[in-house]
Image 1 (spheres, rainbow over the protein chains, first blue to last red):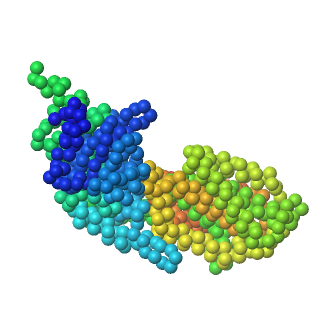
Image 2 (image 1 turned 90 degrees about the horizontal axis):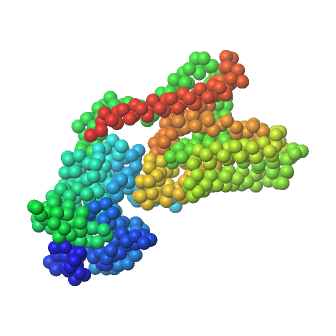
Image 3 (image 1 turned 135 degrees about the vertical axis):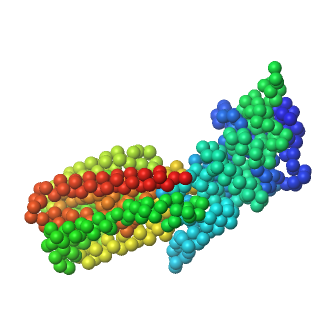
Length: 276
Length: 338
Protein backbone atom coordinates (compact mmCIF):
# COMPACT_ATOMS: atom_id res chain seq x y z
CA UNK A 1 0.00 0.00 0.00
CA UNK A 2 1.26 3.46 -0.79
CA UNK A 3 0.69 6.01 1.92
CA UNK A 4 1.28 8.94 -0.40
CA UNK A 5 -2.08 8.78 -2.15
CA UNK A 6 -4.17 7.41 0.62
CA UNK A 7 -4.79 10.39 2.89
CA UNK A 8 -4.30 10.83 6.61
CA UNK A 9 -6.61 8.06 7.78
CA UNK A 10 -4.92 5.48 5.63
CA UNK A 11 -1.50 6.79 6.55
CA UNK A 12 -2.28 6.32 10.20
CA UNK A 13 -3.58 2.83 9.52
CA UNK A 14 -0.42 1.96 7.59
CA UNK A 15 1.84 3.48 10.23
CA UNK A 16 0.63 1.25 13.01
CA UNK A 17 -0.62 -2.07 11.74
CA UNK A 18 0.21 -3.76 14.99
CA UNK A 19 -1.21 -1.14 17.34
CA UNK A 20 -4.50 -2.85 17.96
CA UNK A 21 -2.84 -6.15 18.74
CA UNK A 22 0.08 -4.77 20.73
CA UNK A 23 -1.66 -1.92 22.61
CA UNK A 24 0.03 1.41 23.34
CA UNK A 25 2.94 2.01 20.95
CA UNK A 26 6.35 2.47 22.55
CA UNK A 27 6.98 5.50 20.40
CA UNK A 28 4.56 7.53 18.32
CA UNK A 29 5.33 10.48 16.09
CA UNK A 30 2.20 12.32 15.04
CA UNK A 31 2.07 14.75 12.13
CA UNK A 32 5.74 15.63 12.51
CA UNK A 33 7.01 18.33 10.16
CA UNK A 34 10.56 19.66 10.23
CA UNK A 35 11.61 22.66 8.18
CA UNK A 36 15.07 24.13 7.73
CA UNK A 37 14.28 27.59 6.43
CA UNK A 38 12.20 26.98 3.32
CA UNK A 39 13.29 23.36 2.97
CA UNK A 40 10.80 20.82 4.26
CA UNK A 41 12.89 17.91 5.49
CA UNK A 42 9.97 16.04 7.08
CA UNK A 43 6.42 16.50 5.90
CA UNK A 44 3.56 15.49 8.22
CA UNK A 45 4.99 12.13 9.23
CA UNK A 46 2.88 9.92 11.47
CA UNK A 47 4.34 6.66 12.71
CA UNK A 48 3.92 4.15 15.55
CA UNK A 49 6.75 1.96 16.74
CA UNK A 50 5.90 -0.95 19.00
CA UNK A 51 7.70 -2.23 22.05
CA UNK A 52 10.51 -4.72 21.34
CA UNK A 53 10.20 -4.40 17.59
CA UNK A 54 13.01 -3.73 15.18
CA UNK A 55 11.79 -0.89 13.00
CA UNK A 56 13.87 0.14 10.03
CA UNK A 57 13.71 3.52 8.35
CA UNK A 58 14.91 3.45 4.77
CA UNK A 59 15.03 6.02 2.04
CA UNK A 60 17.25 7.63 -0.54
CA UNK A 61 19.67 10.44 0.32
CA UNK A 62 17.67 13.47 1.43
CA UNK A 63 14.54 11.43 2.12
CA UNK A 64 14.46 12.60 5.73
CA UNK A 65 15.73 9.49 7.54
CA UNK A 66 18.45 11.31 9.47
CA UNK A 67 16.15 14.24 10.21
CA UNK A 68 13.53 11.92 11.70
CA UNK A 69 16.25 10.18 13.68
CA UNK A 70 17.52 13.52 14.93
CA UNK A 71 14.01 14.61 15.94
CA UNK A 72 13.54 11.36 17.88
CA UNK A 73 16.95 11.68 19.55
CA UNK A 74 16.50 15.33 20.49
CA UNK A 75 19.16 16.75 18.17
CA UNK A 76 16.48 18.69 16.27
CA UNK A 77 13.15 19.95 17.51
CA UNK A 78 10.19 19.35 15.22
CA UNK A 79 8.67 22.41 13.57
CA UNK A 80 5.19 20.89 13.99
CA UNK A 81 3.76 17.72 15.41
CA UNK A 82 3.95 15.67 18.58
CA UNK A 83 6.02 12.79 19.92
CA UNK A 84 4.52 10.28 22.35
CA UNK A 85 6.54 7.86 24.42
CA UNK A 86 4.51 5.08 26.08
CA UNK A 87 1.39 7.12 25.35
CA UNK A 88 2.72 10.22 27.05
CA UNK A 89 3.49 13.41 25.14
CA UNK A 90 7.19 14.29 25.32
CA UNK A 91 9.27 17.24 24.17
CA UNK A 92 12.93 16.93 23.28
CA UNK A 93 15.00 20.08 22.97
CA UNK A 94 18.34 18.29 23.24
CA UNK A 95 19.73 14.73 23.37
CA UNK A 96 19.65 14.77 27.18
CA UNK A 97 15.86 15.13 27.09
CA UNK A 98 15.58 12.06 24.87
CA UNK A 99 18.02 10.19 27.13
CA UNK A 100 15.95 11.13 30.19
CA UNK A 101 12.99 9.52 28.43
CA UNK A 102 14.84 6.27 27.78
CA UNK A 103 15.85 6.93 24.17
CA UNK A 104 19.51 6.41 23.31
CA UNK A 105 21.13 7.04 19.94
CA UNK A 106 24.15 5.35 18.41
CA UNK A 107 25.47 7.72 15.74
CA UNK A 108 27.06 6.53 12.54
CA UNK A 109 30.53 7.68 13.65
CA UNK A 110 29.93 5.84 16.97
CA UNK A 111 31.40 8.73 19.02
CA UNK A 112 34.14 6.53 20.46
CA UNK A 113 37.42 7.70 21.94
CA UNK A 114 40.09 5.49 20.37
CA UNK A 115 42.76 6.11 23.00
CA UNK A 116 40.51 5.08 25.88
CA UNK A 117 39.54 1.59 26.94
CA UNK A 118 36.16 -0.08 26.46
CA UNK A 119 34.94 0.55 30.01
CA UNK A 120 35.88 4.24 29.89
CA UNK A 121 34.10 4.64 26.56
CA UNK A 122 30.97 2.95 27.90
CA UNK A 123 30.77 5.09 31.02
CA UNK A 124 32.21 8.38 29.74
CA UNK A 125 30.10 11.15 31.22
CA UNK A 126 28.24 8.86 33.64
CA UNK A 127 30.91 7.09 35.71
CA UNK A 128 29.85 5.32 38.91
CA UNK A 129 31.14 7.45 41.79
CA UNK A 130 32.39 6.80 45.28
CA UNK A 131 32.26 9.50 47.95
CA UNK A 132 35.23 10.53 50.05
CA UNK A 133 34.25 13.27 52.46
CA UNK A 134 32.96 16.22 50.46
CA UNK A 135 34.48 14.82 47.27
CA UNK A 136 33.37 12.10 44.91
CA UNK A 137 35.66 10.06 42.71
CA UNK A 138 35.23 7.63 39.85
CA UNK A 139 34.73 4.13 41.20
CA UNK A 140 36.83 2.19 38.68
CA UNK A 141 36.09 -1.18 40.24
CA UNK A 142 32.34 -0.69 39.71
CA UNK A 143 32.95 0.85 36.29
CA UNK A 144 34.85 -2.23 35.12
CA UNK A 145 32.37 -4.63 36.74
CA UNK A 146 29.33 -2.95 35.19
CA UNK A 147 31.01 -2.63 31.78
CA UNK A 148 31.86 -6.31 31.84
CA UNK A 149 28.27 -7.11 32.82
CA UNK A 150 26.85 -5.02 29.96
CA UNK A 151 29.14 -6.61 27.40
CA UNK A 152 28.69 -10.14 28.75
CA UNK A 153 25.09 -10.28 29.95
CA UNK A 154 23.41 -7.95 27.47
CA UNK A 155 25.63 -8.28 24.42
CA UNK A 156 26.91 -11.79 25.07
CA UNK A 157 30.57 -10.93 24.54
CA UNK A 158 33.43 -12.04 26.76
CA UNK A 159 35.48 -8.90 26.94
CA UNK A 160 38.86 -7.69 28.08
CA UNK A 161 37.22 -4.49 29.27
CA UNK A 162 40.54 -2.64 29.57
CA UNK A 163 41.26 -3.03 25.86
CA UNK A 164 41.64 0.31 24.13
CA UNK A 165 39.03 0.91 21.46
CA UNK A 166 41.67 1.53 18.79
CA UNK A 167 42.45 -2.20 18.95
CA UNK A 168 38.93 -3.20 17.91
CA UNK A 169 37.50 -3.98 14.49
CA UNK A 170 34.47 -2.22 13.02
CA UNK A 171 31.87 -4.67 14.34
CA UNK A 172 33.42 -4.72 17.77
CA UNK A 173 33.44 -0.92 17.90
CA UNK A 174 29.77 -0.90 16.99
CA UNK A 175 29.07 -3.23 19.93
CA UNK A 176 30.93 -0.95 22.31
CA UNK A 177 28.81 1.98 21.08
CA UNK A 178 25.68 -0.11 21.69
CA UNK A 179 27.11 -1.04 25.10
CA UNK A 180 27.40 2.64 25.95
CA UNK A 181 23.77 3.16 24.95
CA UNK A 182 22.78 0.24 27.19
CA UNK A 183 24.63 1.78 30.13
CA UNK A 184 21.91 4.43 30.24
CA UNK A 185 19.31 1.65 30.60
CA UNK A 186 17.18 2.73 27.62
CA UNK A 187 14.03 1.08 26.30
CA UNK A 188 14.53 2.54 22.82
CA UNK A 189 17.82 2.52 20.91
CA UNK A 190 18.14 4.39 17.62
CA UNK A 191 21.03 3.36 15.40
CA UNK A 192 22.24 5.35 12.42
CA UNK A 193 23.60 3.08 9.68
CA UNK A 194 24.81 0.45 12.14
CA UNK A 195 26.19 -1.87 9.49
CA UNK A 196 27.65 0.58 6.99
CA UNK A 197 31.31 -0.10 6.22
CA UNK A 198 31.23 -3.40 8.10
CA UNK A 199 32.37 -6.77 6.82
CA UNK A 200 29.82 -9.55 6.32
CA UNK A 201 30.85 -11.22 9.58
CA UNK A 202 30.76 -7.95 11.50
CA UNK A 203 27.34 -7.12 10.04
CA UNK A 204 26.04 -10.49 11.21
CA UNK A 205 27.52 -9.91 14.65
CA UNK A 206 25.78 -6.54 14.98
CA UNK A 207 22.47 -7.81 13.60
CA UNK A 208 22.45 -10.80 15.93
CA UNK A 209 23.08 -8.46 18.83
CA UNK A 210 20.17 -6.21 17.83
CA UNK A 211 17.88 -9.26 17.48
CA UNK A 212 18.91 -10.33 20.97
CA UNK A 213 18.23 -6.87 22.44
CA UNK A 214 14.77 -6.80 20.81
CA UNK A 215 14.06 -10.21 22.33
CA UNK A 216 14.95 -8.70 25.70
CA UNK A 217 12.25 -6.06 25.17
CA UNK A 218 14.27 -3.13 23.85
CA UNK A 219 12.79 -1.27 20.90
CA UNK A 220 15.28 -0.85 18.09
CA UNK A 221 15.01 1.84 15.41
CA UNK A 222 17.50 1.44 12.58
CA UNK A 223 18.25 4.05 9.95
CA UNK A 224 19.87 2.19 7.09
CA UNK A 225 20.81 2.03 3.44
CA UNK A 226 21.44 -1.69 3.70
CA UNK A 227 18.11 -2.96 2.36
CA UNK A 228 19.13 -6.62 2.30
CA UNK A 229 20.10 -6.54 5.94
CA UNK A 230 16.91 -4.66 6.82
CA UNK A 231 14.79 -7.23 4.99
CA UNK A 232 16.49 -10.01 6.92
CA UNK A 233 16.18 -8.53 10.39
CA UNK A 234 13.56 -5.78 10.70
CA UNK A 235 10.01 -6.46 11.87
CA UNK A 236 8.71 -3.52 9.84
CA UNK A 237 10.24 -1.17 7.33
CA UNK A 238 9.20 2.46 6.95
CA UNK A 239 10.02 4.06 3.61
CA UNK A 240 10.65 7.77 3.44
CA UNK A 241 10.62 9.73 0.21
CA UNK A 242 11.25 13.47 0.01
CA UNK A 243 10.34 13.93 3.66
CA UNK A 244 7.14 11.88 3.54
CA UNK A 245 6.48 8.46 4.97
CA UNK A 246 5.21 6.78 1.82
CA UNK A 247 4.75 3.23 3.06
CA UNK A 248 5.37 0.76 5.83
CA UNK A 249 6.09 -2.80 4.81
CA UNK A 250 6.58 -6.06 6.57
CA UNK A 251 9.64 -7.91 5.20
CA UNK A 252 7.59 -10.97 4.21
CA UNK A 253 5.26 -8.88 2.01
CA UNK A 254 7.93 -7.00 0.06
CA UNK A 255 11.30 -7.43 -1.64
CA UNK A 256 14.41 -5.53 -2.63
CA UNK A 257 13.04 -4.28 -5.95
CA UNK A 258 9.81 -3.00 -4.46
CA UNK A 259 11.59 -1.16 -1.67
CA UNK A 260 14.04 0.33 -4.16
CA UNK A 261 11.14 1.61 -6.28
CA UNK A 262 9.46 3.12 -3.23
CA UNK A 263 12.71 4.76 -2.17
CA UNK A 264 13.45 6.24 -5.58
CA UNK A 265 9.94 7.23 -6.75
CA UNK A 266 7.83 7.31 -3.60
CA UNK A 267 5.19 5.06 -5.19
CA UNK A 268 4.69 1.65 -6.70
CA UNK A 269 2.66 3.18 -9.51
CA UNK A 270 5.63 4.40 -11.54
CA UNK A 271 5.87 1.11 -13.37
CA UNK A 272 9.54 0.46 -12.74
CA UNK A 273 8.74 -3.15 -11.82
CA UNK A 274 6.74 -3.82 -14.99
CA UNK A 275 8.37 -6.36 -17.28
CA UNK A 276 7.93 -4.22 -20.37
CA UNK B 1 48.56 -12.09 27.55
CA UNK B 2 47.35 -14.89 25.40
CA UNK B 3 46.57 -14.39 21.75
CA UNK B 4 43.30 -16.29 22.28
CA UNK B 5 41.58 -13.89 24.62
CA UNK B 6 37.88 -13.00 24.66
CA UNK B 7 36.22 -11.95 21.45
CA UNK B 8 36.84 -8.28 22.07
CA UNK B 9 40.27 -8.80 23.60
CA UNK B 10 43.48 -7.84 21.88
CA UNK B 11 44.69 -10.21 19.27
CA UNK B 12 48.36 -9.46 19.81
CA UNK B 13 51.10 -11.78 20.90
CA UNK B 14 53.05 -11.52 24.14
CA UNK B 15 56.02 -9.87 22.43
CA UNK B 16 53.93 -7.08 20.91
CA UNK B 17 52.16 -6.58 24.22
CA UNK B 18 55.50 -6.14 25.98
CA UNK B 19 56.60 -3.65 23.31
CA UNK B 20 53.36 -1.67 23.65
CA UNK B 21 53.74 -1.56 27.43
CA UNK B 22 57.37 -0.45 27.05
CA UNK B 23 56.39 2.24 24.56
CA UNK B 24 53.80 3.60 26.98
CA UNK B 25 56.37 3.69 29.80
CA UNK B 26 59.57 4.43 27.93
CA UNK B 27 60.46 7.36 30.18
CA UNK B 28 61.63 5.10 33.02
CA UNK B 29 64.32 3.08 31.19
CA UNK B 30 65.46 6.30 29.46
CA UNK B 31 65.67 8.07 32.83
CA UNK B 32 67.66 5.17 34.27
CA UNK B 33 70.13 5.35 31.36
CA UNK B 34 70.50 9.13 31.72
CA UNK B 35 71.09 8.84 35.48
CA UNK B 36 73.75 6.23 34.79
CA UNK B 37 75.35 8.45 32.15
CA UNK B 38 75.36 11.47 34.50
CA UNK B 39 76.90 9.36 37.29
CA UNK B 40 79.67 8.26 34.93
CA UNK B 41 80.41 11.45 32.98
CA UNK B 42 79.31 14.33 35.27
CA UNK B 43 79.24 12.68 38.71
CA UNK B 44 79.37 15.98 40.60
CA UNK B 45 75.76 16.63 39.47
CA UNK B 46 74.54 13.93 41.87
CA UNK B 47 77.53 13.75 44.23
CA UNK B 48 75.57 14.12 47.50
CA UNK B 49 72.13 14.87 48.91
CA UNK B 50 72.68 18.62 48.60
CA UNK B 51 73.46 18.26 44.90
CA UNK B 52 70.41 16.05 44.39
CA UNK B 53 68.27 18.54 46.31
CA UNK B 54 69.57 21.35 44.08
CA UNK B 55 68.62 19.38 40.95
CA UNK B 56 65.12 18.80 42.29
CA UNK B 57 64.74 22.41 43.46
CA UNK B 58 65.77 23.70 40.06
CA UNK B 59 63.25 21.28 38.53
CA UNK B 60 60.30 22.93 40.32
CA UNK B 61 59.49 25.77 37.85
CA UNK B 62 60.04 23.63 34.77
CA UNK B 63 58.09 20.85 36.44
CA UNK B 64 55.05 23.07 36.87
CA UNK B 65 55.33 24.16 33.24
CA UNK B 66 55.58 20.52 32.12
CA UNK B 67 52.42 19.85 34.12
CA UNK B 68 50.67 22.79 32.42
CA UNK B 69 51.80 21.66 28.97
CA UNK B 70 50.86 18.05 29.71
CA UNK B 71 47.33 19.08 30.59
CA UNK B 72 47.00 21.03 27.34
CA UNK B 73 48.54 18.20 25.29
CA UNK B 74 46.29 15.57 26.88
CA UNK B 75 43.29 17.68 25.89
CA UNK B 76 44.50 17.65 22.28
CA UNK B 77 45.72 21.25 22.44
CA UNK B 78 48.98 22.94 23.32
CA UNK B 79 50.17 26.14 24.86
CA UNK B 80 53.21 27.99 23.55
CA UNK B 81 52.63 30.88 25.91
CA UNK B 82 53.22 29.18 29.29
CA UNK B 83 56.80 30.47 29.60
CA UNK B 84 55.79 34.02 28.84
CA UNK B 85 52.76 33.78 31.16
CA UNK B 86 55.14 32.66 33.93
CA UNK B 87 57.53 35.52 33.12
CA UNK B 88 54.89 38.23 32.70
CA UNK B 89 52.94 37.24 35.83
CA UNK B 90 56.13 37.23 37.89
CA UNK B 91 57.36 40.53 36.45
CA UNK B 92 53.99 42.30 36.78
CA UNK B 93 53.57 41.17 40.38
CA UNK B 94 57.22 41.94 41.11
CA UNK B 95 56.76 45.50 39.84
CA UNK B 96 53.78 45.94 42.17
CA UNK B 97 55.60 44.50 45.19
CA UNK B 98 59.22 45.53 44.60
CA UNK B 99 61.07 48.43 46.18
CA UNK B 100 63.62 48.94 43.43
CA UNK B 101 63.80 52.53 42.02
CA UNK B 102 61.88 51.74 38.87
CA UNK B 103 59.33 49.49 40.60
CA UNK B 104 55.76 50.65 41.11
CA UNK B 105 55.76 49.67 44.80
CA UNK B 106 51.98 49.54 45.16
CA UNK B 107 51.98 47.11 48.09
CA UNK B 108 54.42 45.15 50.22
CA UNK B 109 51.87 42.60 51.33
CA UNK B 110 53.15 39.15 50.21
CA UNK B 111 49.64 37.65 50.37
CA UNK B 112 48.42 40.29 47.95
CA UNK B 113 51.36 39.28 45.79
CA UNK B 114 50.33 35.62 45.83
CA UNK B 115 46.81 36.58 44.83
CA UNK B 116 47.92 38.95 42.08
CA UNK B 117 50.35 36.54 40.42
CA UNK B 118 47.87 33.65 40.46
CA UNK B 119 45.00 35.79 39.17
CA UNK B 120 47.20 37.29 36.45
CA UNK B 121 48.30 33.90 35.13
CA UNK B 122 44.78 32.46 35.37
CA UNK B 123 43.27 35.42 33.54
CA UNK B 124 45.73 35.15 30.68
CA UNK B 125 44.99 31.43 30.46
CA UNK B 126 41.28 32.17 30.55
CA UNK B 127 41.60 34.56 27.60
CA UNK B 128 43.65 31.93 25.73
CA UNK B 129 40.86 29.43 26.32
CA UNK B 130 38.06 31.78 25.30
CA UNK B 131 39.86 32.79 22.09
CA UNK B 132 40.42 29.14 21.16
CA UNK B 133 37.11 27.62 22.31
CA UNK B 134 34.67 30.42 21.58
CA UNK B 135 36.37 32.36 18.78
CA UNK B 136 37.70 29.23 17.09
CA UNK B 137 41.29 30.48 16.85
CA UNK B 138 44.01 27.97 16.11
CA UNK B 139 45.76 27.08 19.42
CA UNK B 140 49.20 27.39 17.82
CA UNK B 141 48.56 30.90 16.49
CA UNK B 142 46.69 32.09 19.58
CA UNK B 143 49.32 30.96 22.06
CA UNK B 144 52.16 32.08 19.79
CA UNK B 145 50.59 35.54 19.71
CA UNK B 146 50.36 35.58 23.51
CA UNK B 147 53.94 34.35 23.79
CA UNK B 148 55.10 37.36 21.78
CA UNK B 149 52.70 39.83 23.40
CA UNK B 150 53.55 38.96 27.01
CA UNK B 151 57.28 38.64 26.46
CA UNK B 152 57.12 42.06 24.84
CA UNK B 153 54.99 43.42 27.68
CA UNK B 154 57.42 42.04 30.25
CA UNK B 155 60.37 43.72 28.55
CA UNK B 156 58.40 46.94 28.18
CA UNK B 157 57.75 46.94 31.94
CA UNK B 158 61.29 46.36 33.09
CA UNK B 159 64.70 45.54 31.70
CA UNK B 160 66.48 45.36 35.05
CA UNK B 161 66.14 42.75 37.80
CA UNK B 162 63.26 43.55 40.13
CA UNK B 163 64.48 43.52 43.72
CA UNK B 164 63.17 44.35 47.19
CA UNK B 165 60.41 41.78 47.14
CA UNK B 166 58.67 40.79 50.41
CA UNK B 167 60.51 38.04 52.25
CA UNK B 168 57.60 35.62 52.44
CA UNK B 169 56.84 36.10 48.74
CA UNK B 170 60.39 35.05 47.83
CA UNK B 171 60.67 32.31 50.44
CA UNK B 172 57.88 30.23 48.87
CA UNK B 173 60.08 29.35 45.92
CA UNK B 174 63.31 30.04 47.74
CA UNK B 175 62.97 27.26 50.29
CA UNK B 176 64.05 24.06 48.51
CA UNK B 177 62.03 21.61 50.62
CA UNK B 178 58.86 23.68 50.35
CA UNK B 179 59.25 24.28 46.62
CA UNK B 180 59.91 20.60 45.93
CA UNK B 181 56.89 19.77 48.09
CA UNK B 182 54.73 22.12 46.03
CA UNK B 183 55.85 20.39 42.82
CA UNK B 184 55.22 16.89 44.17
CA UNK B 185 51.88 17.95 45.62
CA UNK B 186 50.84 19.47 42.27
CA UNK B 187 51.75 16.26 40.43
CA UNK B 188 49.97 14.14 43.05
CA UNK B 189 46.81 16.24 42.89
CA UNK B 190 46.75 16.32 39.09
CA UNK B 191 47.57 12.63 38.88
CA UNK B 192 44.54 11.88 41.05
CA UNK B 193 42.34 14.39 39.23
CA UNK B 194 43.18 12.95 35.82
CA UNK B 195 42.56 9.38 36.93
CA UNK B 196 39.69 9.65 39.38
CA UNK B 197 37.52 12.58 38.34
CA UNK B 198 35.02 13.13 35.55
CA UNK B 199 36.99 16.24 34.61
CA UNK B 200 40.21 14.27 34.15
CA UNK B 201 38.57 11.61 32.01
CA UNK B 202 36.77 14.29 30.00
CA UNK B 203 40.18 15.85 29.24
CA UNK B 204 41.39 12.49 27.90
CA UNK B 205 38.16 12.16 25.88
CA UNK B 206 38.58 15.66 24.46
CA UNK B 207 42.15 14.87 23.46
CA UNK B 208 41.21 11.57 21.90
CA UNK B 209 38.34 12.95 19.80
CA UNK B 210 36.78 16.35 20.33
CA UNK B 211 33.80 15.42 18.13
CA UNK B 212 33.11 12.19 20.02
CA UNK B 213 33.52 13.97 23.35
CA UNK B 214 30.87 16.49 22.26
CA UNK B 215 28.55 13.71 21.09
CA UNK B 216 28.70 11.94 24.45
CA UNK B 217 27.59 15.12 26.18
CA UNK B 218 30.85 16.77 27.27
CA UNK B 219 30.77 20.57 27.10
CA UNK B 220 33.98 20.75 25.10
CA UNK B 221 34.10 24.54 24.82
CA UNK B 222 33.88 24.95 28.58
CA UNK B 223 36.44 22.21 29.10
CA UNK B 224 38.96 23.85 26.75
CA UNK B 225 38.56 27.15 28.62
CA UNK B 226 39.08 25.42 31.99
CA UNK B 227 42.17 23.58 30.69
CA UNK B 228 43.81 26.80 29.48
CA UNK B 229 42.89 28.62 32.68
CA UNK B 230 44.54 25.89 34.78
CA UNK B 231 47.51 25.98 32.43
CA UNK B 232 47.82 29.73 33.06
CA UNK B 233 47.49 29.19 36.81
CA UNK B 234 50.24 26.56 36.83
CA UNK B 235 52.45 28.83 34.71
CA UNK B 236 51.92 31.62 37.25
CA UNK B 237 52.95 29.31 40.10
CA UNK B 238 56.03 28.44 38.03
CA UNK B 239 56.76 32.18 37.80
CA UNK B 240 56.45 32.47 41.58
CA UNK B 241 58.81 29.55 42.06
CA UNK B 242 61.31 30.99 39.57
CA UNK B 243 61.24 34.28 41.47
CA UNK B 244 62.02 32.44 44.70
CA UNK B 245 64.72 30.30 43.11
CA UNK B 246 66.58 33.36 41.82
CA UNK B 247 65.62 35.71 44.70
CA UNK B 248 64.69 38.53 42.32
CA UNK B 249 62.66 38.82 39.13
CA UNK B 250 65.28 38.68 36.37
CA UNK B 251 64.42 40.45 33.09
CA UNK B 252 64.65 37.23 31.05
CA UNK B 253 62.44 35.25 33.43
CA UNK B 254 60.48 32.47 31.71
CA UNK B 255 62.07 32.86 28.29
CA UNK B 256 62.75 29.65 26.36
CA UNK B 257 61.16 27.45 29.03
CA UNK B 258 58.26 26.39 26.85
CA UNK B 259 60.51 24.20 24.73
CA UNK B 260 61.86 22.40 27.77
CA UNK B 261 58.29 21.97 28.96
CA UNK B 262 57.37 20.40 25.63
CA UNK B 263 60.39 18.12 25.74
CA UNK B 264 59.64 17.04 29.31
CA UNK B 265 56.01 16.24 28.54
CA UNK B 266 56.77 14.37 25.31
CA UNK B 267 59.65 12.37 26.77
CA UNK B 268 57.33 11.62 29.68
CA UNK B 269 54.98 9.86 27.28
CA UNK B 270 52.33 12.55 26.81
CA UNK B 271 50.99 12.27 23.27
CA UNK B 272 51.48 15.28 20.99
CA UNK B 273 48.04 14.50 19.57
CA UNK B 274 46.16 14.21 22.85
CA UNK B 275 44.26 11.55 24.75
CA UNK B 276 47.23 9.45 25.78
CA UNK B 277 49.81 9.72 28.55
CA UNK B 278 50.22 9.60 32.30
CA UNK B 279 50.98 12.37 34.76
CA UNK B 280 53.53 10.10 36.47
CA UNK B 281 55.34 9.78 33.15
CA UNK B 282 55.42 13.57 32.84
CA UNK B 283 57.05 13.74 36.30
CA UNK B 284 59.74 11.38 35.00
CA UNK B 285 60.15 13.73 32.04
CA UNK B 286 60.66 16.67 34.42
CA UNK B 287 63.41 14.87 36.33
CA UNK B 288 65.09 13.85 33.10
CA UNK B 289 65.01 17.34 31.57
CA UNK B 290 66.36 18.98 34.73
CA UNK B 291 69.00 16.30 35.17
CA UNK B 292 70.28 16.93 31.65
CA UNK B 293 70.20 20.67 32.31
CA UNK B 294 72.14 20.36 35.59
CA UNK B 295 74.63 17.96 34.01
CA UNK B 296 75.23 20.45 31.19
CA UNK B 297 75.74 23.25 33.72
CA UNK B 298 78.29 21.09 35.55
CA UNK B 299 79.97 19.76 32.44
CA UNK B 300 83.48 21.00 31.70
CA UNK B 301 82.93 20.16 28.02
CA UNK B 302 79.77 22.14 27.29
CA UNK B 303 80.04 25.90 27.76
CA UNK B 304 77.22 28.08 29.08
CA UNK B 305 76.67 29.54 25.61
CA UNK B 306 76.15 26.12 24.11
CA UNK B 307 73.52 24.92 26.55
CA UNK B 308 70.57 26.32 24.57
CA UNK B 309 71.78 24.49 21.50
CA UNK B 310 71.98 21.25 23.47
CA UNK B 311 68.46 21.92 24.76
CA UNK B 312 67.33 22.08 21.16
CA UNK B 313 68.88 18.69 20.50
CA UNK B 314 67.12 17.29 23.57
CA UNK B 315 63.79 18.55 22.20
CA UNK B 316 64.61 17.04 18.80
CA UNK B 317 65.50 13.73 20.46
CA UNK B 318 62.19 13.80 22.35
CA UNK B 319 60.21 14.36 19.16
CA UNK B 320 62.16 11.64 17.33
CA UNK B 321 61.48 9.26 20.19
CA UNK B 322 57.81 10.14 20.11
CA UNK B 323 57.67 9.72 16.34
CA UNK B 324 59.35 6.30 16.54
CA UNK B 325 56.98 5.29 19.30
CA UNK B 326 53.95 6.36 17.25
CA UNK B 327 55.18 4.45 14.18
CA UNK B 328 55.86 1.28 16.18
CA UNK B 329 52.47 1.54 17.80
CA UNK B 330 50.73 1.99 14.46
CA UNK B 331 52.60 -0.99 13.01
CA UNK B 332 51.62 -3.24 15.91
CA UNK B 333 48.03 -2.02 15.75
CA UNK B 334 47.87 -2.74 12.02
CA UNK B 335 49.27 -6.23 12.52
CA UNK B 336 46.79 -6.98 15.31
CA UNK B 337 43.67 -5.53 13.73
CA UNK B 338 40.84 -8.00 13.25
